[in-house]
Each structure stands twice: as structure tokens, then as C-alpha cells.
Image (cartoon, rainbow, N blue to C red; front, side, top):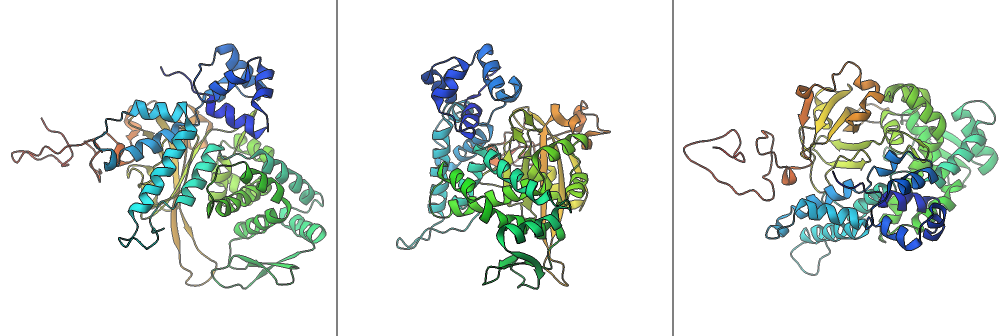
Length: 467
């Protein structure tokens, strides 16, 4: 059994509460230097100290042990599977040691590899700038890492959203009506549906007095856009502080993060933390039922479910992935521990891809990764498009899941024999780091694979080892 790694989570929880290392160390009865070693996973945590730390943050000890660095380890394994490192005997254990003992350095290595890939795509002419094309724009990867590092939970934005939602609810006329009154009374802005250019979701009129929202948006998207705008007026201080405390690179990353934080604020207003958590538990994470209750979309609810990480009031640690029909992963986040590819498409055996074959239905899968960990995953395909004739349609699939031991907390596990091994689907993270050579859907060999073809025999896959 591996020693539990709690350093990353302790550091994140301490920073979320704006605590100095010395203050937390004094509260749990250790030195600041010893706490620093713990936060970098360089000292073991005794059981009594584990209980003290968990109690201080209002967590169960098991919740504190859940690792935040698993996704980093998966990203590193994917990076080190590149042919650049083909002659280096880097083991998975060495990669895990780096991810868990020094996650800050591990993230720096990932940023360096992202930059290397960007430069590798640069035009041959030395005077031309590096291409920004491809699936791994450095700013978007930096934002993805930032969300993962913060476990997709921002307490200051939650507090701001609760304050604003209380004022919106005070007239007692429902979210949309209360939002109109709030905008008028607090900001002096009217909100109206308007015919805008097809590419535009909303705009503020030149006099700053009217917020126009496209009349071809679905109702839940229209409301979300209004609250997203509201973030730029009432949550600026909180967003600025979060960005200032981050290690984000300059250029595009801070701009993109501001948009992500505004979306987080909007979700927190539309789906307030405590009522939403209570409803999620009551309805056993029935996404469609939650969407109906809170006037949100399926995707918005899935996102919100991943943010329920308030100490002492946590939801299920979930992972989320969004992909298009070409296999491009546009959103990825993991608290469940499952690794989601950083630079390549995900395993085609994942139900997030087979969901496209059954549009609009919930697809359930028990997925087992090569390390033996098992996950309970649901996926559903979505079609997005405006409310107008001949509007172009965009097709996505959303995957949501947890560790198998938490599956019974989700309504989608009803009627499924979770102990039946024949129900388990072997999946990988990506072909380059998946050791399963007998997979008929393998697109690339593993990084360390050497072909040994025998003209006298032929397997179903050229990657299989025969004999």
C-alpha cells in the first residue's frame, strides 16, 4: 500500500482560508518547517496529526487523504511517453514520485513540455512565430491546471454569490424576476431579449443602461449570461484576488481565467451551494432532475456538481470531461482520481464516446484503468444550437464519474450489479501510455513498444504479442 499523500490538499485548504503556514502549524501543534515538509509530501503524516488536520478543516480523515496530484501524475506519464524520452529509462514510479513529492515542479515540467510541443508545431522559417493551432494552446492548458490545482472550488466566489443571491431572492418573485429587479435597483441596468448578430450572446448598449441578451438562446443560457455579466460588476474584487494569488502565465491565461471565474460565479448564483448540495443528495445526483429544479442545463449542472468541495459539506469527488465528435477534449477535470489525457484523445472505449451512438440518453459504464482502479461513469451526448431556423448544430458529449465505491450515491447505479466483473470495461488513458496490447481499438503502440512481426502468424492487432 502507498503512503497517503495529503500535502497538496492541506496546502490548497490553507491557502483558501488565507492562512500562513505558521498559523496552521500552531493550530495543530507542529512547527511551520514540519508543516512545509508535509505540504510537499516529504514527511509522513501520523494518524493523530491526520485527525487534527481533518478536524481543523471540518473534513473526515478519508476526505483529506484523497489525493490532488493523481491527474498531475497522469499528465506527466503522458508527457514522458513522447518519443523525445524514448531513450530515457523513466519509470512510472519515478514519475509518481515527482508528482506527489513536488507538484509545483511537476506542473512546471508540464508547462515546459506544452511549450516544447507548441514550438514543435512552429513553421520552419525561423522568423515566424510559433503556431497556436492544435489541441493544446498553452493558455488553455494553464487554465485547466489552475482549476485542477484549486479542486474547482473558490470559497470567496461562493460567498459573493450567496450574498448576491440573497439580495436577488429578497423580493420573493423567483430568480429571473429578482435578477431583473437587482440589476435595475443596484446597477441601474435593464435586461431585455433582443435580436443580436448570430455570433453574439449579449451586449451592453452604448449608454450602459440596457443589457441585451440574444433572443435565440435557450432560457437557461440567457439567464446564465446575465449572471455572468453580473460577475464583472459585483465580484471583481474576488476574481482579482484569485488571479493575483495564482501562478498563471501572462498573455491570454488571466483573461481566460477571468471568464472561467465569472462562469463559476454565475453557476453559484443560479445553483446556490447549500440548497444545491442538499438537492443533489436528496435526488442522488440525478442531473436532469437537478436541471429542472434549478432552471439550468445538463452541462451546467454537471459542472456545478464538480465544485461541491466546501470543507465539512462536500459532494462526491467527481471527474468531468467534454469531447466533440472528433475526439477533441475541450474540458477536463478530475477529483475522482481518473486520468484524463492532456495532449491526446481519450480511450475510445470510454462511454463518453459511445454516448454519441445513443443521442440524449444516459450511458452508464463501469470503467477500469490499467492501474486496477475502477470508476462509475455516466455520459450523455448534447446538441447545441440557437433557437432559429437552420441554425448550425454543435455536438458534444459530457462524461461524469466517481470511484466505484461512491457509485451507490448516484441514482444511475440502480439496477446495476456493481460487483459483477463482467460489467467492467477495461479503458486506458491514452494509447501511448496504455499497456493493453490486446485492445482491438488501439490507435498507436505504447511508448516502449517494439514491433515483432511474424509472417507465419497474424493477430487481430499488429500491436499484440503472440506466442
